[in-house]
Image 1: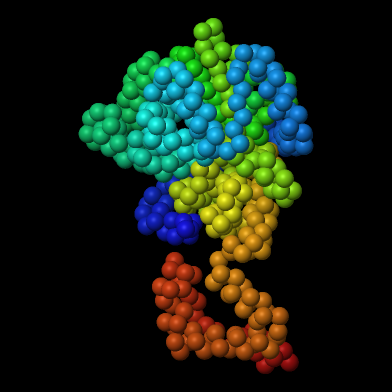
Image 2: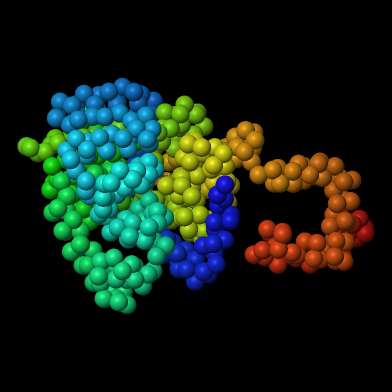
Length: 453
Ligand code: SF4
């Protein structure tokens, strides 16, 4: 079973990388702050977005049907997938029907969640990720470590080595401009030779049956416009009721993500161009279960801006891969236990509960409160760490009796003084990264009893 604390240790071995990862994401967080301070009605916007999403989640079935009806009228073929497996099968069946064995794909965290690339590769389909960060991690055979900045854990020198090996750039070349040009040339040929393109969906509008894809590189547009078959994969929570609601979300999304006023491309797809086939796959994969969990349903408001990751002190210093799930960080730690409580039981504990994530969330998800609630559910369901649970029980017993508390304090001070190795050893996880304090001669209670007069 994978564990966040153990995986973080791997990331923490390279202290320089940890510091630089921490500082880079904090820089993005500061850019977000500057961008939000320029909007006087920022808090009203957040509240509006939260309420719009609340409305959608309260009537999701009807909005989905409305979207389906309008999309079909526009000429889009709509598919429903109950889980990741069905989603992957649908994508494969569309490609198979057209005899297509190569596809270009823009950023879609849903396809990461469904492990689509592996599924298609096993079926002999070649998939090229066209987002620059996604392309880098694909070539490195790694998953993305951040939902907006997929290769934020990599230095430019490492990217230079990857491009040298796979794309033929000069050995030792680490100039970001030249590396980007190299990727651009490679991708241009890919775009021109692929008949199928898959994109994600940032927002789908129930009123019009259209969907909106936001990118900074224009890669989704390039893929979709040049392809004969455009497939869009969408989680069922991505709906908004009306086109006018988009203004609220587009203003919030990129300011929260990267500090830009708006994404470079916010493209609306409403109908296929003549001769093209356009498909949209509406994927549940556990979302309706989460919708039914009163305490956690708000997590479906997420617009995947990544701000909660950039601000999280644990994420910044443990890296995205330590979360061992497609969506890392605070929001991923709420979403993942819904899919598999046992496999992801560790994630809600990977937080200080400082609340910074909830403060920056543009749709006002009570992230840290949900993390705290998941901890309670996980322990109640018997998936918690058994050693920690036993320690907590011992602590509860000790703290509930002044006599036991005084005795335990005395024993602890004696052990720390006379047999320090009993606590200062590598088996003690607390000691691994910290020095244990020197034990005082007496407790405060004892000192007070002596000195109060
Ligand atoms: S939970 Fe909020 S802050 Fe985190 S990615 Fe989603 S919308 Fe952004």
